[in-house]
Image (cartoon, rainbow, N blue to C red; front, side):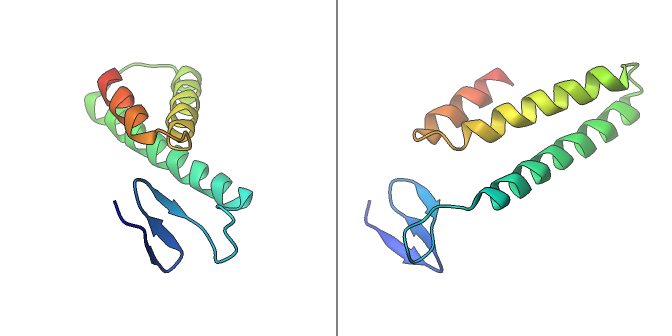
Length: 92
């Protein structure tokens, strides 16, 4: 695949976000991304639990959400992310 660069997004065999100096995403943005993934997981599971009226401990639910959101967040930073996405999809 050919290399294209548009507004700091480099597209070739995988998609990366880099600035003009070649640096990757800063750590504070990675933390913000994780928080966004965690909040989306938490709100989705909260709505699902309330809708289906499932009896579950909130502590256990929050620990599971933290664990799986961290796991899927780390999957996307591995070099072979397509394989990890397919692997993660097979777990569901």
